[in-house]
Length: 262
Ligand code: SAH
Image (tube, rainbow, N blue to C red):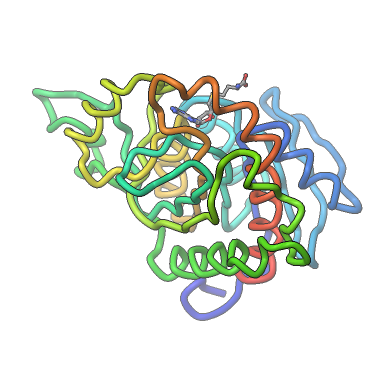
């Protein structure tokens, strides 16, 4: 069945960027069993009636590309959902917000002068996009999961305490996510990146690699990033606290909802 004509029933690959996120997912998968391929642990099981293969992406573009390739060629998944955290770049993209990628660029790809800066040699483009209909479903689902009702006490995510972290209710953004093999934690680097890629909403280290592999295999994918820091000089301070208090809860709730929608 095509993602355009209805709901997939096939195997779905879930890639988490952090052990905390993966563990939260495994805790709710009743029959998960681990298999080791390419030095990675793949957890195969079921959740909400779907066949799921869950795996830690590992950090960086090559690691994520290898993990994605195994999910596609060894496990034959026909959709991939990636969840993790990212640094916020765009104006109005705050810590605690969630960005759903509708385009992804490798910000450290530069084969100039042979090819324009950022262009993927051989592909003739710099940005890759998941299918628009798939992205729209993902964005709507994320918006529903993070609605004010769900986040107030009594709601599904009512136990996520935003106030102690000085966070407001999260906004869901859709747009360009950029990836590179660099943890960005300097305001000047952010300025350089946004000057070169003005529409970028978030920066991270894996999404565009996942996109390129899924593009080659012709498989729909979603990259969903909770903003953990502003990629500025305080990025390393905000990061660990945020992951355990907020991001892993969002991520599990989002994945569970998507398993029932996509
Ligand atoms: N503390 C982690 C390291 C995380 S590296 C550890 O010890 O394992 C940062 C991860 O979060 C990467 O997977 C990247 O995709 C994402 N990320 C979050 N903020 C980022 C930023 N400012 N720049 C680049 N990647 C960021």
